[in-house]
Amino acid sequence: MPAGAMQQPAEDTNKATKKPMSLIYQINRSKKRRNLALKVARGNLEVQAPWHMSEAVIAQFVEQKQDWINKHLNRQRQQLDNLMPRKWRSGERLRWLGQPLKLKVSVATRKTIERYGNELFVTTTARSNSEREPKQTIVNWYKEQAMQWLDQFFSAWSTAHQLNPTSWSIGDFTSKWGHCTRKRELRFSWKLWLAPEWVVLNVVIHELCHLQEFNHSKAFWQLVAQHSPDYEAAEQWLRQHGVTVLNNQYLDFTDD
Ligand SMILES: [Zn+2]
Image (cartoon, helix red, strand yellow):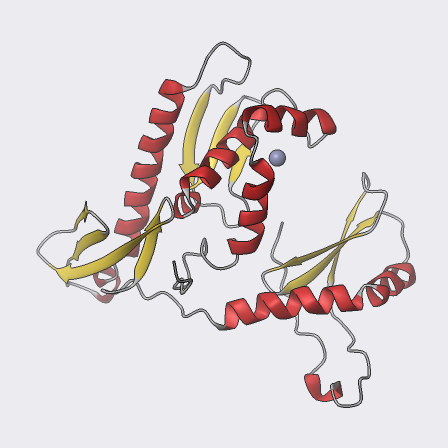
C-alpha cells in the first residue's frame, strides 16, 4: 500500500464544541473493487473505492465511520508519538525473531558484526560520518541471517505437495512483508525477522500458498489454514505491531 503524503485532520480546536473534524484522506480507486473500504495505516486514512463512485458518496461513508476512524487513527498516532527515531547507537535495541538484541557499537579499523547471545557487536570505521553509522552493516547482517533461516526452512519443507518456489530472496520492502511472483519466486523483507518466529513462519506459508492460489480467495485462506492453523493470530500480530516493532526507523519501546 503506498504511504501517500497525507495531512493531519483538522486541528483539535474543534474538540470543545464537539464539532466533527473534517478528515483528509487518500482515495485509492480500483476497477475490481465493488465496495468501499477504509484503511488506517501509519497514522493516515486511506479509502479504497470502486472506480466510478462519486466523491460525495465516499465522503458520506467516511462521515458515518468517523468514530471508528478516529479511534484507530488516534491509537496509531499515539503509538508513533511514543517512538524515538533509531540512531543506530550503542544501547539501542533491535530484535531477532522477536528476542531483544542489544546493539554495541565501537570504532575499529574495519567493519565487523558479530552476535553473542542477545548482544550484537558492530564495529565501524571512523573515516567519515556516514561510515560511523553502522546501519548498512546491520541491515546486511539481517539479510544474511534471514537468508540462512529461509535456506534452513526450505531444506526441511516437504516437496510432496505443490507449494515449492523456484527461488527465495530477501529485499528491502517498506510496505509489505513478503511477495510472490508468477515465476514462483518468493521475496521477503528482512524486517520480518524482527518479529517472533511463529509470525515469520506464517508469512512464509502465506506466500507459499500463493504458489497454488494466486489471490486471496476463500480457497487460498483454506489452504493457509491447512498449513498454518494460527495464521489469523499472526495477521493480527502484524497489524498491531507493524507500525512499531517492525519499523526499523524507530526504537522499539514495547516491554517484554
Ligand atoms: Zn497474500
